[in-house]
Length: 508
Image (cartoon, rainbow, N blue to C red):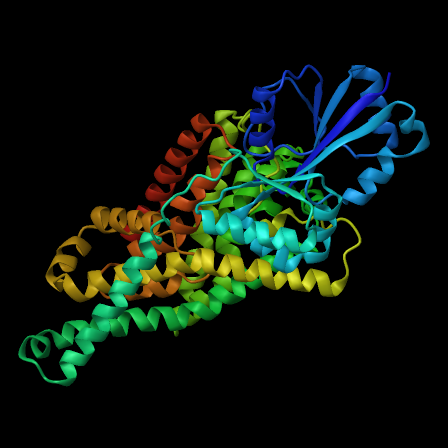
């Protein structure tokens, strides 16, 4: 008796596992489930994880022979060529043992337009070869209908369903709060400027404050954006052109040379901050020791050549600050790596950790296959654009908060705080943690504080921020154990404060 093989495919985050769980609830399924991709959600039903294996004829034959079930459900990666998958299943040796049942394509409405615009040919091939399409993440009925209409243009007869089997009518979601706040801020700024042009009394009095705010804000933005743009572009080039395997191979097995590579690797491998945590997790999974991988995670964003250049332009005429930032950054990273060695932390990753990426859909494209120069460069620009807008909001928020603090808080308050090394350093480190500004542009925000805080505490902003901030902790929670994250945060905070306090007290 032949085994029925059903296929469920879709991109990472589309909701394949959720669909399978709901399908299992509605059907009395007693067969086996094979996963060639494991996402964030773990399948509760008994299954076999083959996400790191190659889908070929021998692999499928082995699966069929081992399980000997009437029914086999295979979850596929959306980047796998569906036509090649079907050609494999239709080979003579397999046709004697299996037959193909339903082919279900799971698509996220939120991701659909981006995927379809950039990978139209591949997606249309998947749509035509599928028996049924299941849509997820539809926030409105209109959005669901728009995606369905696009699918019907490709294949008029295709069956399209919602994951809930019916569309739940919802009100349009409120716009992102940050967008609303930005729009209100711009409107308020324009109103103030118009009022000042008519020389209204109140705005004449407050004009100096408003002018000061706009000057500080615009100067930070205009000076920092070029370096941030260069940073995300170089990072995107690395993501696309440098393979994950090669990145792991450059770390030697010997501990001393491994530490040296971790400290100075960022000069040749300027990994962006949003990608440094996934790279670190990948290094640990491939056998690089935890202390060396953590040292690389902390040192790379500081020794990045673009960070060095931005620091030079942010503090003209003070080249010594570059060496101080690099020296103390590498010293702190090395001290933390040694501390992790002493603590003896070995099992630090989650049991179900997956090969993380920086969060954008372009990192999911399998570039180890034959991909032409033009296609790769297109992905570079798409990746860079996506990352630019992702990290750009932190720069805008950081610049706005910095300008607000300096324009509206009396200088006397800063003078009182700045006279205390302890409090000034504590405030600047906390500010760096909350602002979460990219290291390629944080020097310009730091410079704006130089007139109100000691240079040692400002250096704390530039050294501590690239090592630990809110967005990095959120990334670490996706792959590291919470107990290790807590220890690492404490170690980074304590060692950074002690060494930076020494810097503030004795050098500035």
